[in-house]
Image 1 (cartoon, helix red, strand yellow):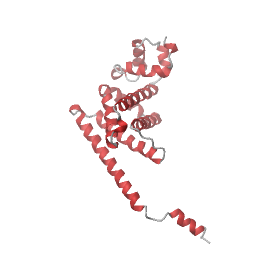
Image 2: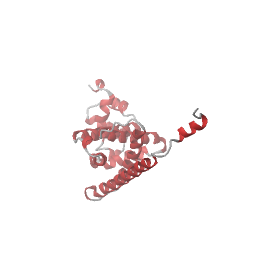
Image 3: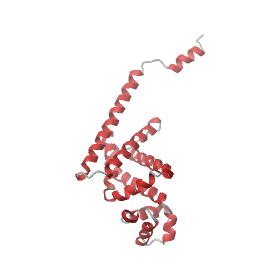
Image 4: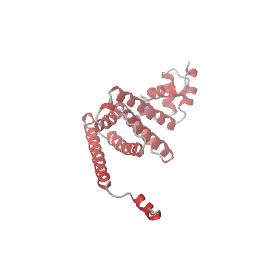
Length: 216
């Protein structure tokens, strides 16, 4: 009985069943009702699980995060070199959505509406966080945030490129991802060199402290 199943468990089922209809009906009640019928889920319960397009796209990206995480863990992504972890995460996410590009396009159109800006930011952060966690990242300091911001930027740029990529096997997208990762790695190396180069400088806070509180 679907009324005994938690709504959180119904959402990914409904989303999966909606995907064939989304290219025609969009992320709408019509697509949801067809999915509910296909899954033998009461339409009223389905409406409670996915009441509107915002809830539908949020559930879609959450499901995609879970599928990507499962694939990364199964492949042992946390044992790869850092560059390969990120490349694998990005490729996996896009490859898993290869058959649903129009659904992705429609979801992105919803998330980029001004009134849904918070949804777009939340789902992008969640995806970047899922990628890093599946890659074995355990950072809790400032790097925790900077890594996710940078990867979120790389993912969003790659996603937009992928949506319009008609190259065979999406070869152009994979090359685009490689260039983006190369740019990030070069930046990280430059940042590390800058930090090391400045490490010999005196601590300004300590210097100011001495001015205020001179040693006796």
